[in-house]
Length: 174
Image 1: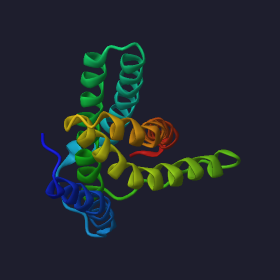
Image 2 (image 1 turned 180 degrees about the vertical axis):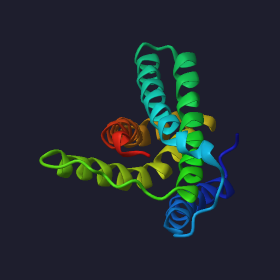
Image 3 (image 1 turned 45 degrees about the horizontal axis):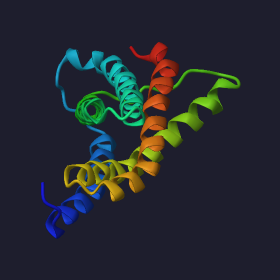
């Protein structure tokens, strides 16, 4: 892949369009009937967050040990899992009402802190991940390393916090 101004612009557009599209689709009050199969999606999404986090850790191990092939495979897997997560997340939320959190006591503010930080950081990490992958694909390793210093820990936090949020709310799915 060649580094071009057009590719930079595409990343900029996607970095805004993806979070806006997700917010708009989730905000639609009238849900689209896609069938009962969508009820299982929160569990699949929770699993995808888990495997994404695992792939990110494997990718870090790969690069730290000098195994760039392992790093590339793991990070590619994390990107595919993240993309699949996004598609399934949208499908679930356009077809099902939001599940209210039923926890009480000290766990309630913990849940909402994790949920809000997860959502806010997931919005920002889209651009960072797209840029990191773009720099890797264009072999701009200096820029890749610079952006990954931010992208990696945020992406890992988003993945792990997504798993924790899922575990906390999963008893309330119907």
